[in-house]
Length: 134
Image (tube, rainbow, N blue to C red; front, side, top):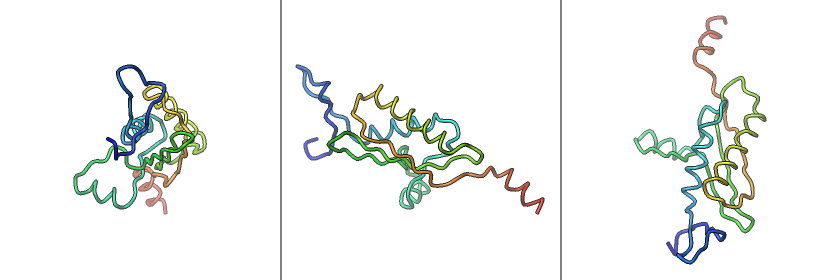
């Protein structure tokens, strides 16, 4: 793991050795925390990830980007929210859920958790009703 980027957990250094956490682990924990927040439809990946997923390759952490910096971990999360939710409120709940999950499971220093609302998902039944009325 000498060439790979990993996060060294300094407070977890002991006589047995050191503990390192790969950014992929942080991405997966973040994605799972996002999936537990009400009002979020899905994580939003980029075009290449969407094509790969259609070809059968699942990516649990699509829409999550982790940068390891001097001040701690910077996390960017792109989501699609459900229609009718209060977007700022759900975004704050996402930040809290991600922060709590990462602090509990990894004890990493977190610099920032940025939520990017990429889309709003309309319910198909509501869309069909609106089309019928027009």
